[in-house]
Amino acid sequence: MELYWLTAQEIQEKILNREIKVEEVVQIVLERIRQVEDKINAFVTVCENEALQQARKIDKKIVEKEKLGRLVGIPIAIKDNISTKGIKTTCGSKILENYVPPYNATVVEKILAEDAIIIGKTNMDEFAMGTTTETSYFGPTKNPWDLSRVPGGSSGGSAAALAAGETFLALGSDTGGSIRCPASFCGIVGLKPTYGLVSRYGLIAYANTFEQIGPMARTTYDCALLLNVIAGWDPKDSTSVQIQTSDYVEKLTGDFKKLKIGIPKEMIGEGTEDKVLKSLFNYVSKLEEFNVEWTEISLPTLDYALPAYYLIAMSEASSNLARFDGVRYGYRVQDLDLDWNQVFSKSRREGFGAEVKRRIILGTYALSAGYYDKFFLKSLKAITLIKEDFEKAFKKFDVLVSPTMPILPFKLGEKINNPLALYLCDVDTVPVNLVGIPAITFPCDFQENLPVGVQVMAPPFKEDLLLKISYLSERKLQFNKFKPKCDKK
Amino acid sequence: MEKHISREHVKHLSWLARLELSEEEEVLYTSQLNEILEYFNKLSKLNTENVPPTYHVIGKINVFREDEIQPSLSNQEALKNAPKKRNGFFEAPKIL
Image (cartoon, rainbow over all chains, first blue to last red; front, side, top):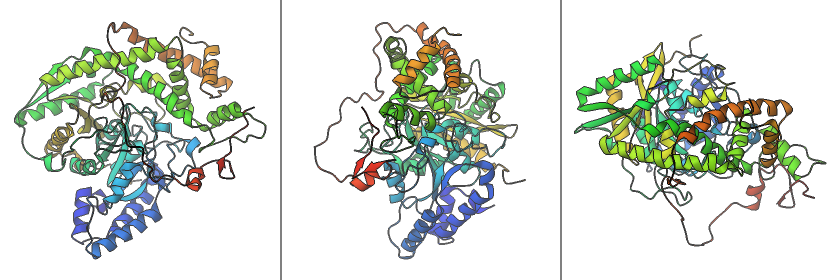
């Protein structure tokens, strides 16, 4: 097997045993990127020089027997809405095409402090608004399992890079499913942490009350390893929570006393493909041997989660994206004779893509006089009821399980001109962000050589339980051994 | 279909958002926004009488810290990404 298919855990073992130098690991990944990137388009920026420089620094540390970090020598890809000092951070947008952050996001500081290597910045839907990575100004990313299909979004670059062997670890962000959707479509593991577990400092905001940065990897162990590093309170993010975090790697193993699973029937109803349902029930029936029992349940208010999510997310977007005024950073039109409002409006007209504009206009509408109560406030009240439904369910069940995506990865271009059809794809992922709970996705089956992901949801701060279930499922199902053949002509 | 929002209204919103739209965009967004709002209108069926809004899932209100001077960006770093600058300031378009 090619070395780029090893897990982060395995490559780190080789580094620590001095079987391979970090510089060689980085060269292997860069070579793999050169081999497949013209087909996949997972990266906006590949950090060749920075990565090699950092690798040599770490090799020196190893030789000189200095204390080493927990991610020593592991190449990691970072979604392009997470600020990296001195490295372009575009958000997949023309308006930030040349933006170079003067500081690092807290998660970036943390992974660098643990001796990881930033290999590149990954492609994404513009400002994380999308389900396919097709809204990126830098062109769509392709699904490594079938290059004619979407990789999911908005963290499509991070997911595709992992699935294609172009990195060992990746960071994504999840506002309404943006880690879980592409992880599911690309057949990898992705975790959306509890709101407040991971610092958002340096994450360029889209809908700040919903989004979290989270780990993406080819195995559950790798995912836990990365979560260990990024979780924790940050004084620079006032919404991060002061809580004792677990050692998620240590807690991966061990049996369940008994695990009770609820499957919300609202998440397996109309709009869910039969193939996806078949995969889901096939998966849960395989769990029975592990002292796991499951029942279908109802969370009636889930039917209202999608409109509530989109209305609030768009409202927050319209406010958050007001900072792009062409004065402090970002694209600005030539403005010899134009006044402030004209420069502002025209820079945004030329700098933003279609989906971002649509959401800003709709968000402005939902917040404007006469519509605020009907749409925005109503959505906030809906959250209260949806949260109550989840709390009730978690009194009876340890976790809830659903398909991550109601459909299999679809063709590029198939839905991009129908915004509502795309929004409806997020029906099973957005409730999690509305109520702030953690959720994981991992592959539970393959249909027509395309991965099918399962979503497991838990009460706040139960990431350890989610990772444990994923770890157990992975050992039973072994889908992480499957690799796409994207390098074949 | 102009049940929820008219083209004039979209035009007004684009002014409020300081986001100029082309004529084609105005037409396209009017029809798409009507379709989307028709679906979002589903929310009106949810009974929310006496239900308080949830502004924030973790329920934090205020977070305070001591007002101490900490390192921050230099003038040069802060201006590095500005499309226009002059004498150590951002250069903004004229207002009057």
